[in-house]
Image (tube, rainbow, N blue to C red; front, side, top):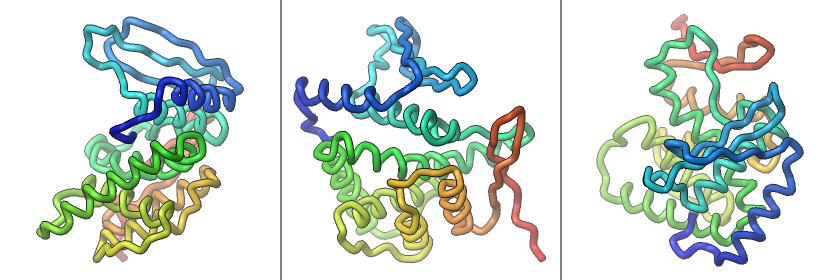
Length: 228
């Protein structure tokens, strides 16, 4: 979130606004190794795992909000909005390679909720990420990785969508930006996220994804594009 974040009173108001939207109970467990928010659709509850202070893993307020919005969307829309869940048999190397793309697609929707509940802080974050991305792009050179392309595309698309200003994004980066802005982040659906993920993957031209049913849940599966 923004460097100069909200005051303690503003934080309390933001958290109250966010938690009032949940129907499932939110449980908390302490003295864990790391911070994590886990949504359990089978038991219809969320668990916030708080790390011990000595672990050095205490989350920032922005990270806490971000993970709680994932949980909210997992409850209200579909469990896949909590975190990407892949079908058994998915190649681990493909899962790891494309995980940043799935994360960016989810963040597109998370960001929209954050703009509702904490518009100043999230807006500042959008501005900062765009400024950083634009600075890196001005240095020129090849785009280093899939993760860099999708993260930079998300930053530029966010600035364009929420600030209403055009951005210059050539090549694959421009296609990524267009994939995001064609998708309404304020109307999250599994169908819409599936379309966004497929559109983002199509930019790279080697794999596509589908949702398969496994043990009562839809899970992602990644396959190579068959050459005709």
